[in-house]
Length: 156
Image (cartoon, rainbow, N blue to C red; front, side, top):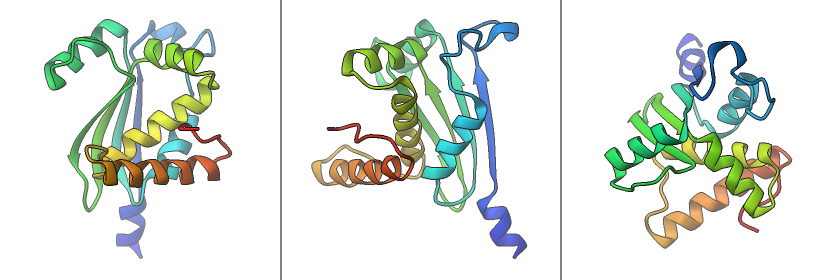
C-alpha cells in the first residue's frame, strides 16, 4: 500500500505573486489555497507535484510571448515536466484576465477559476485540444468534473 499512497500524494504550492506578501488576498477575489487543492484533486488522476502561480498581467504577457510567441496575457498557461507516473508541472494564472473573462462571459469568478485550474491540470496530464477530436474529449472531461463539483457547463 505505501506505493499506492505515495502515487496519490499531492504536493501543491500556490504562489500569490500579484500582491504584496501582507495583503495577497485582501480583496477576497483570489481563490484560497484550499480551493485550489480541491480543484486540482478533482481533476488529477494520480498524485503530483504542482505549483500554481498567480501573476501580474505584465509577467503573464512576457511568459506567453516567450513560450508561445503570443504577445498578450492569457488566462492560464501549463508547463508539464512529467505526466507519468506522477504529474509534475506548473500552472500560471493571470487574475486580471480571469476576472475580465468571467465578467464578459457572465460567469461566476469562482467557477471560471475552477474551470481554468482543471483545464490546466488536464494539460499537465497530457490532454490537449489541438485537434477537434481531442478538443471534444477534453471539453467532455471538463464538463464531467465541473458538474460533479456543482459548477455549470463552461461551454454552454
